[in-house]
Image (cartoon, rainbow, N blue to C red; front, side):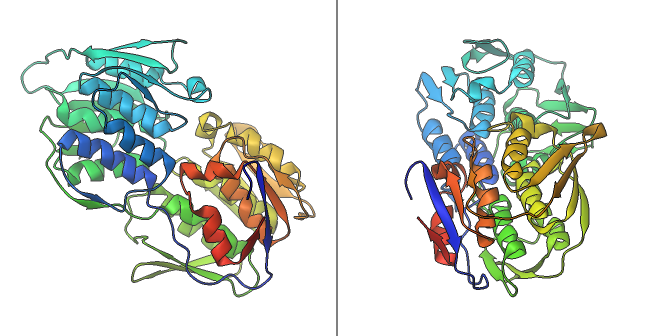
Amino acid sequence: MNSTSLTLQWSGAPLSGTAQLPASKSESNRALIIQALAGSGRLDNLSDANDTQLMQRLLADPTAEALDAEDAGTVMRFLTAYLAVTNRHALLTGTARMKERPIMVLVDALRELGARIEYAETEGFPPLRLQGWQPEATADGELAELSVRGDISSQYISALLMIGPMLPSGLRVNLVGKVGSRPYIRMTQALMQHFGASFRDLGSVLEVRPAAYQSADYTIESDWSAASYWYAMVALGPAGSEITLPGLRQYSWQGDQAIVGIMEKLGVATEFVADGVRLTQIPSATELTHDFTDCPDLAQTVAVVAAAKGINLVMTGLESLRIKETDRIAALQTELASFRAYLLEEADAHFRVTSENFQVNGQEVATYHDHRMAMAFAPLAIRGPLTIQDPKVVRKSYPQFWSELEKAGFQIG
């Protein structure tokens, strides 16, 4: 593998064996913030993803006056709230792409709670200059109250909730309108409660009582988002393909466990075993409609599999894909077209995936600085030779991805 591209080919045999997954970076990054606020506690099986390693490094230096969140959305958003509530004075910046990702909703909410934050460059976008914390008192027994749009990134909402116990009056968040990525909010709630927070979920109202976090130990689950790529390989593999994925829980806090039900329609059965899941092939449906509001990180994987198998797929809930590491809708449209597949926008924010004579015959896939573009398209190499540009992008969430593919039987050059 060189730094600019890699070529993938498949041996032709059925997929088999065991693949190692990274730990969930979504759980890891939330647990790291809560642990830092609690002051102690042991975290086992932390993700080795770049986003999590970055979070650890930035949290480990309590005196740094400049912090670089690079391209990590959770790091930028969670640290904004953490630095504010811990009364830090610092500049928080990121990559050029991060400086294009909006953060005004979070900054406005934190300002309302007492944070002093200025935009160092463009209004509404990073970098941010944090200048301390001056919370205003509320009436006795009254929670500090915010109204926040529910259709924004759940990372904004999670960032606010995690600092709730540290506020003198606690926090009530009123979610206005449709709520997206609800499972990520539930994950935040579960982790907060594990570390002793008092949390009430009243649907569109979330309440956190003022009380210090308690020390606790926690073991991070393997990552269901990463598992989705192995589901894709089983779905696209030769007859008899199967794989075992350790470290996944049947009762998971991760919203991307939705891949179990989605892939049942796309030709993969899931069996929960002692320490994970075993995936096997089953017949596919001919069509599927799915709302990705609660699991947007699965959209690329599912679109690619459906296109390759000629399954008529209708996708909704893709709004947040426009502001990820890249515009993932535009990226999917461009790269699918080289395989004679199409992601077509229809009325009412519905997207349809179609294909005609889908073939893999040496195409080169651009990844747009997006780890999920690389990993969503890589399973197509089971159908024919394929080149992936900028393969190192996978370090963001699954650094060992290419080595695990090699162990599974892919030829990588």
